[in-house]
Structures are given as C-alpha cells and as structure tokens.
Length: 82
Image (cartoon, rainbow, N blue to C red):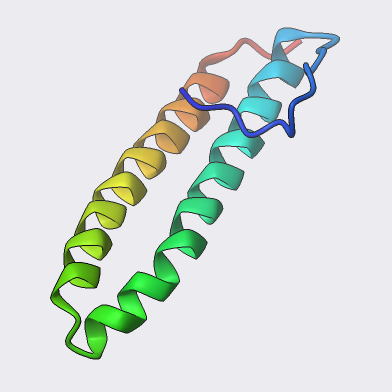
C-alpha cells in the first residue's frame, strides 16, 4: 500500500486511530489518482489516443486505490470497540 503522509511518520495512540489514519490516507490517495487523471481524460475526450491509453491505465489505478480504501474501511469496522 502506498501511504500519503507527506514524508512524515504517523504515530497512533491506539489501533483505532491507526485504522482511521489508514482510511484517510487511502482516501487521499484515491483523490490524488483521480485528480492526476483529469488532464488525460480531457485529452482523450478530444481524440488523443495516447491520452486515452493513459486514462485507461489511470482508471485501473483508481480501481486499485478504491479497493484499498474499501479494505481499510472493512478492517476498521472489524476492530472491537473499546
């Protein structure tokens, strides 16, 4: 998993805090992947074939990032409540 933490190590007081940070990190990664794809999607809409290839790859990355987020949410839900 790629962590979006701006180069700093995150410290957690409890496993629940860690899960919430992981969810936020995964969501931030998903947002970044979508934002990074915007230019290629626009170019592909204009008929640029190379941009279409990049956009399709970016959508696969979006799918993977969304799956990571989904798994983090499910894992956090399974944690016992204090």
